[in-house]
Amino acid sequence: MSEMGVSLNFSRLEHKVPSYRPEINSPYTAPMLLRNGHIHTIYPTLFRKVENVDYVREHIVTPDQDYLALDWVRAGSKTVAIITHGLEGDSQRHYVKGMVRALNLAGIDALAWNFRWSSGEPNRQLRFTHNGAIDDLQTVIHHASLRYQRIILIGFSMGGNLSLLYLGKRANSISDSVKGCISFSVPCDLADASLALAKLENILYMKRFLKLLHQKVKTIKMHFPTEIDDHDFCRLKNFKDFDDKYTAPMHGFASAEDYWTQCSSRPWLKHIKVTAVIINSIDDPFLQGGCYPVEECTINPMVTLEITRYGGHVGFVQHGASGCYWSEVRAVNFIKELNGF
Image (tube, rainbow, N blue to C red; front, side):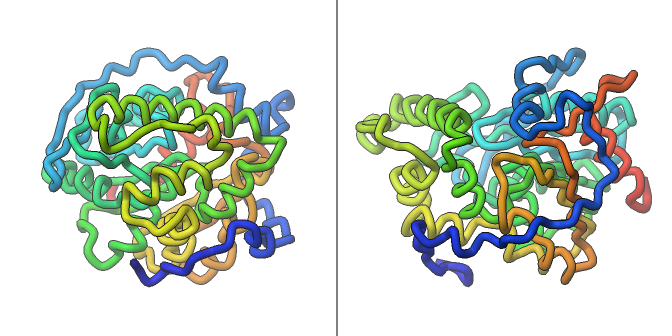
């Protein structure tokens, strides 16, 4: 299937999780009341509202005659940031709109694209955007490169893994306009991330993901009634169950473990040739072990792993006058630090 196509035994994956805790090397300091990974993860979802983000939607055709929905907010820049959301997210999520607003305030154009079957409109093909769907990201990047001299990738969670995997696998063929990437809360090792979310303490997150995934399956079933079903979906308890039943067979993988192995960005970080920053919190309940790829980032000077003490999963809350979170300020500064902006 690929160079990385080694099957893993889920029951033995615990043995590959490093026992060390990576060194914290980020200056980010969380508000006192949010110095708990679970609280910090949940707080923005419940309480953050981002106003004054008015998208202009565009649909582009994919090579397989499907389409992707792109949401733009332009500031008149020659630089555009392509924002890739997380699993079961979309361009309307608070973390995406918060980033779009921060970019626009800094004079940077923003393009937030939606995964297949995540835009609120039905797609045409029996497939969805998964962790290894770098062809969809390539389609978006190619489209943006027709208009912009400089492209920066910004990824959240699954979107971060997808962006980094793209940069690693396509290292020798990406557009010269792609100048860098910054990503947050990245499950660089999908097997370890799946183990983390399968823990009892994370059962509420897992149930929420499965509920959203079930809604997606039911939507796809409406358009492909004889090719997909949700029979016994209630028996699925974790990502291994879902990926074995849906992701793997729909997209040509042998199993959930095969999918995780082939689509984790961790083994590909050493190949990245543009400036990339990975920012993961040590208290992120979704991440463990190989999701903190210290060795891989040490080997490749183009990739920096920045580890925060607090931040939860896609949190990084900071209350300032601009209303921007720390992750948004960090991303804008990253873009400004790149030569030529």
